Length: 178
Image 1 (cartoon, rainbow, N blue to C red):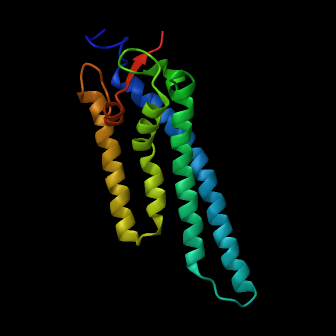
Image 2 (tube, rainbow, N blue to C red):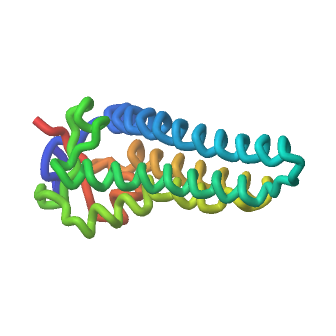
Image 3 (cartoon, helix red, strand yellow):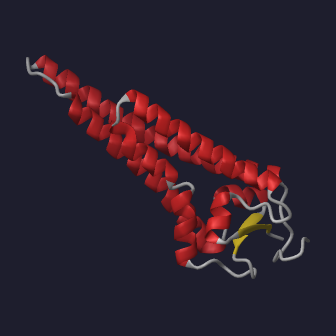
């Protein structure tokens, strides 16, 4: 156990696999939400065209933006609520890891909100900006992807505690749950 750690620190790949599990869950939920949103937008366009009306794509964009924000917020809420219970998301449960404060105690609600706001909350920002033109949205999505990559690289390079940027910002540590 490294000095200053409240418990054994998991290997970087254990955290990665836990996050992949959580991202798969998020992807399924977001996919369902976006499929419903796109279906509503397409149905509205077809319905409008079939009665001889014109269709405004602004309505479709609003539907997709709301769905994107909703799916991103749901991921942040999932992260917050699961960590509030016992310091574990489903991915952490599978990988037998747990989120704690530096002293080993359960993180406060404010700490968990702060942590969830930066990651995975950043995905809600991407959804919110879906109304931008394709070029701007692509740049924002790329920036979020780069942030996510850098956040993950910290787990590999920040030793001995292996804290990601969102852990550093919220002052939390992921340990092995025994």
